[in-house]
Length: 186
Image 1: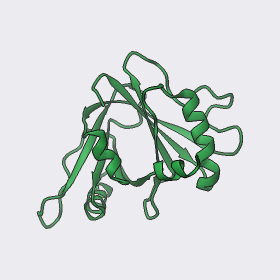
Image 2: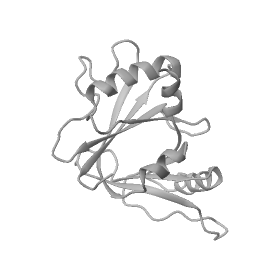
Image 3: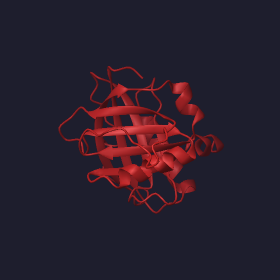
Image 4: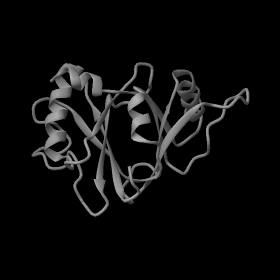
């Protein structure tokens, strides 16, 4: 991921099962995506307290104004069934990890912060093992000032989530990659 890209995060509030939601999402995401950058779909893990069930990440060249899920007749919903779409915003990458490392990790933690945030720490002072992508708001209409996408082992991600859940103005959401589920649909 290069710094001349805009990364868009879109959340989906639905009670639909993955077998129903994934094909519909795939259809709309493929119609609206930039050809060289396939979007990533993530599903909220159980135990993660947040109202959205899914989140997708889309990448666009900085000069393009192609935002996903904005062109449907009834904006904010898939026409086939009730899915509320909420745009988190367009962000620019300020720190990234290699794509191969991202693909190796099926689980990740997304921290949405209203202001630039500090590094997570453990109560016992031991170091946390993680890598992360950091994004800063590119547009004034973004819901958050910063988004941080953490990759690491389950224990570290749970510890980091606990750290951020105690901080006002942040949301910490444990997610899992839906690429495996999407691959099974082919």
